[in-house]
Length: 265
Image 1 (cartoon, one colour):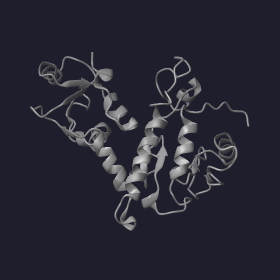
Image 2 (tube, one colour):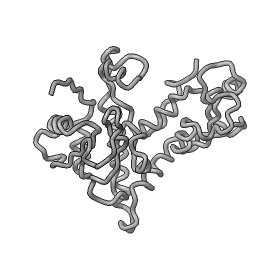
Image 3 (cartoon, one colour):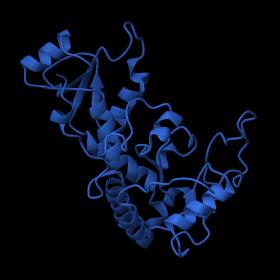
Image 4 (cartoon, one colour):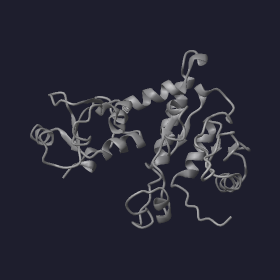
């Protein structure tokens, strides 16, 4: 098949180390031919996946009539208990039944056509002549998380009660633990349920406390621009004022992002 494929920096280190502590499966929305070719690229000897490759239609998922693309993924084709399965994917939407097992990573869009395909604004990595760093990029961060999950899972006093979903939730709560966040003009004026906004929910999933009111306990104001009352208060009292991307980056890389990198100016 004719296709250019750019491997994410750090992939070989990730696969080598992850395969020593996990049984790896490759799961793609692509068809069988695509899955087979990608498996050859990632695992030319067949040792890592050992035939554990799931592609479009293998899981019996219903298809959209228009584009024949599966609506979702599930763990039906994966042997083993859900309590012992960790998922790494760049889409939360396609795992509606397994969100608590999922580590969401940023979509890797190296080529310009990839960004256009997914409707993403801005230039691709190729266009800005920059790439992720293998030592601390997405795969390095994901590897560190699954290594901690593995260690905590097998340190459980009773393995029958160990569950990667609760361990992952604890890992997430550590990331923004101790942060108390107020949002400024992030939500539509008069929004009745700001706690339902994805940004609010992500911040709380990763350990922050979100509130509508400023007080002495607030540590961060999340805003898109300067000039609001909340932003002015934060600046005058020495609080962090950061773009929404600070929350998103912290969640995607499983570490508290550096606030100056996301400072509102």
